Image (tube, rainbow, N blue to C red; front, side, top):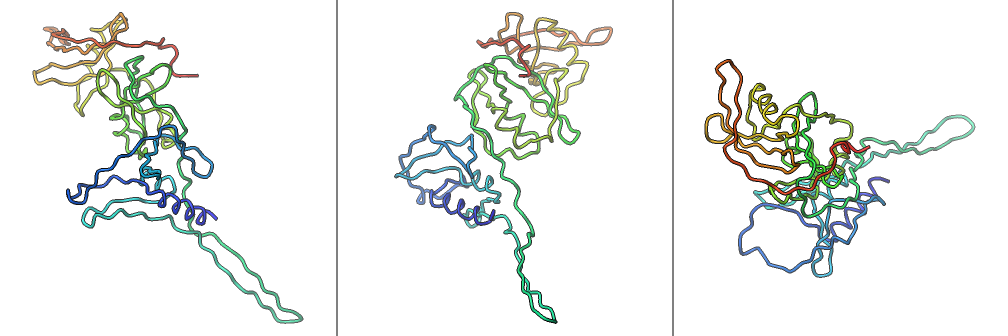
Length: 301
């Protein structure tokens, strides 16, 4: 039955002309069209609502991401650049068999039976959530996700009570989370993703807890004594959230929150103390307007 259901849904999606992002095409094969996004349209698979997809309407037909729909149906979707071919590999169909039993004596009996071979993995269905086009820095949280005993630092923005995780941090974790709808932070320009669009893919495989120090950006390594000195520099009423090296020796840029709850991008310098340790000083900054919540509201109950 699952195989029959898949065929029906796959046929429907193909008839709808779903989109697939591929490689670069020759100019003479491109055709410019006028289409419309319909965020008011909803998508369901087997009665389950699918979030993070906005249908595109063109010439009376609805278009959705081919790859995302295929993967939700348990299929493998790939792109062959050499032949400019979109490939969809359906999951293996259940194996069925029949047999006849005969016996000697006063009568003969026949019987049939079915057996299941390989099955299909349950499609991952994300909840329907409202994702704004833009958010601002609200209540930032330094976090450490753990997957297969490896830590993955991430910046969480608790925007108006909803958890958004910085997208580039999510991509560091080696788990396919599909193609969720993203939102942009107004001032830094960084992309974030709604936590509820990620959780169904992670299931119980990813754990985590608060990060002790600022998140080091760009794959660089910064000694713990510097990170500790940075926390001491900001003190009880300010906090550094991310740190990234600049071109100068011992110079960094730090995203931090000031005692007035506004966010700042500081340029800081570490200078060695004569008795060991580091002296931290600032040599430039810019501020970001913010909307704040009480950090005691996180994590949500």
